[in-house]
Image (cartoon, rainbow, N blue to C red; front, top):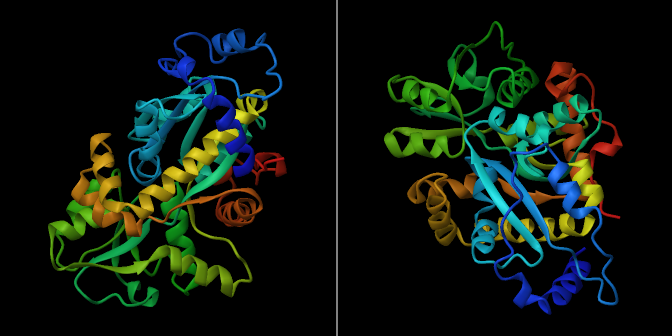
Length: 355
């Protein structure tokens, strides 16, 4: 893919004068795809150099690791450095702010929780595709003390958590059950509506234990020097899966796109994936500079981001590796609750595999 992208970018470099100032995104006030299809349907086919078409792309991400891995691309977009792709980014606080706009066509590409991607695929009769995994496990067991050294030590504890009915609940149940702990009987799980409430409960409970995602886990540690990360749920999940003969990983976030957009603009999708992969690499390799961008784009404060990034498992996994890891994860969620994945495990068409 990278060789193809390079050739595309070289071709489009000849059009640099034209590209300056061409970065405004299509309005989302009209129908989902009406204005998009009307503007693109009759474009002439590029000749000789096969230059990629100019495409306006609306991208959404959630505050947290998925957006943290996107900040270099956001900065490049602001500087007009994204070749023929012209992005408009939206950072949302919760998935339900993204879902309706994605279904309606107001967003072309979005970073969403892994199980939500499956739900969307089933809900739209296969009109969503997952392009890549962007975040593995970001969940940690944090305690106010030093009593938790293994999953077995959670027995009899009260665990503060958020995300009931979504990935955090299923991940916690899987980890506990795989280690012989009944989530209904052997522990008390007190669900809160927001991660911040869990942090507050943990701060105010001397014997508190909470399941927190990054960067909230780091926020808790910064508020109280007696707190520590006791368990990495990604490692615990993979250990349990391996014991059950599975290579499934704990997958938190993925990047999805509307299938009609992917089919209409395959070159733009490939360019995006290359740029996004480079952005993720930048975040992981340049923590201090990336943290400054993270604060600039009002995701989280730079001081928190700098400490949290190494624990966020921000990644880029595409192709067959993505299918294997995500497929195994969705299978496990289905086994716990079919509705967690939208009633059925997605078919192969769910996975975008570059041709």
